Image (tube, rainbow, N blue to C red; front, side, top):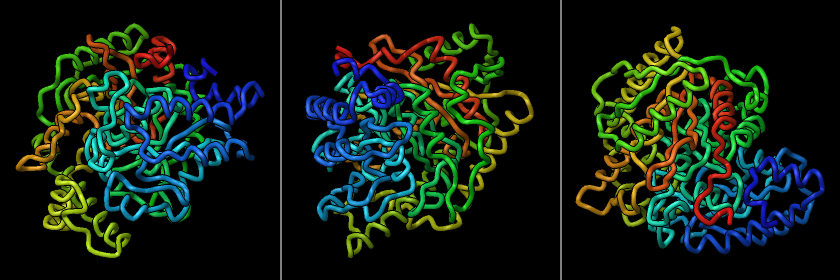
Length: 482
């Protein structure tokens, strides 16, 4: 079992199917790694090791990942009876539990995955770092434990990067799959809006900003999981066209030469670190060597860069205000300022005061941006957009401090980091972060590729081609493969 940490989820499932290893062995090994790594990383906030051991010894569903150890993010999908704190201390005080299986949670279970626990997230998934008051310390990046593992899926990404599990649940409302994937050297796909159902509790969170899937080491793991979970369920407000063929078949399919627009200017008017710009240009050279055409480009403007940020915050604030009402129902009393962190309360208050007209105006602005981008791509100018996933290398822990005079200052820093991610939540397009580059100090730098609506197939084909040409699975955080 000493070599299993080097394998992706697909390879682990193949060992189980061949009878070369048992689910009990995989789970026992994963728990051992968790007990060794988690005290330092603080990635798993709710261990479920006894439940995992019992499940691995029983009859598991015969899905594509039978027997593979797995972790749920403590926000969004889950299974009945699991802890559900969402990074909030008031929910932990009442030991909130999932009252039902979510649709995605049941699909993960039916895939044969064995859940070891739930992973840390910033309070309500707000910040691009995982440092909630709830967890008595931050989640640390396995590549450099003085740095952030990203957010809001930072616990999941840290656990996968540390070799605890090969794949873990993640969700994305402004970059929360792609940000930690970039900072921890993983593959992270944000699927097209409504590709993956969030039933039964949600139809389209914040009018379609959020989606859920996984972070993983390999493109084939992400593709196989997308095959397993995609598609609407009865009652969803809308859905996506089904793919022409399984996404797993795209991984090895290869691509025709693509016309790719390279963006290296911040979309929010902020300054990018030179390291991420250089990384994106190096990735562009890799693409050109594979026969693709890369052209530096600026997206058409739809108002001032500040307007993009403000309208995004309007949608987020409305979502936090709505969430506060839900938390009040769960707690059986009004949510108070003492129940949440300063930034959370500031967003709740902003959402309460701005009103419905501001919310609808923000959606209209984002729909305009989506039409402008669609014009660039559908009219045949470009097939894909590429960017540095983030505006900087993984920041030091404490960078997003929200305890100053204005908690919203933390959101300004988040804007600088996530300048290339949130816009594609607003437009609904699929986007993937690939661990193609490294900084001079040995930190992962993700490169983001964005396709037209429903274009996950193109992203997966290109990602598979890049993974074959420039393999990254054996490039792991220090000590993981030792």
